[in-house]
Image 1: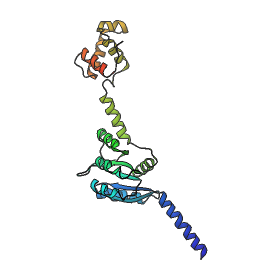
Image 2 (image 1 turned 180 degrees about the vertical axis):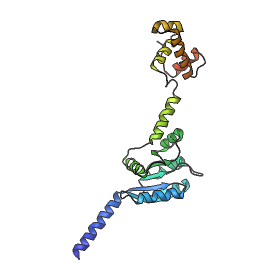
Image 3 (image 1 turned 30 degrees about the horizontal axis):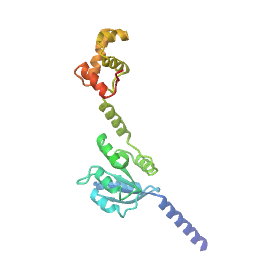
Image 4 (image 1 turned 90 degrees about the horizontal axis):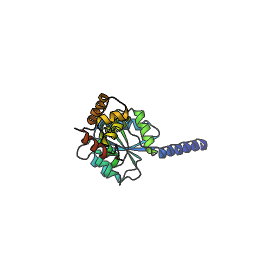
Length: 230
């Protein structure tokens, strides 16, 4: 009897220890099916512990002061109080928690706002259960994760936003000579390339810098520090 009691006590202690070590997860999403699906997924993982959910940003903020959680899974599109405003309001109330955005929005501007508001990770809802679990682990360990699709979109937006980001090395070289006031003929002589080739490059430069003429292209290049006047 004593052996059985000792075994039961040891098992209970091990269970309690495992439960204490589990990553506590709270979900904020206005769709019941998503909340229920996430609850089932989290409860099936021994290293995770479901601690509750909220169907709106307002409810989440009201519950935050008495909440013990490590991770908050946050939807972005919700009525009245969206996910970004909810993160902003909850962060001071949950200083030890990390926020993972779980959304359908693949929008670089929205993602940047969410990350600036304090989200540690940004994941799309088309991610698999295993991907989400991996992101929860990584975020809890202090390693933020951004969905690959969003990373590609952020890079594309940055390149598009930066004037001259798509200029080739040869076009940058010509642009530098244009900034020195050289004519097409002088550029042709300097680089040893035919006039039609020079004109082709100049046309591409104007198009990529959205400039109507050489002067406007050079001014844009100087403002964007694509070239420097010696």
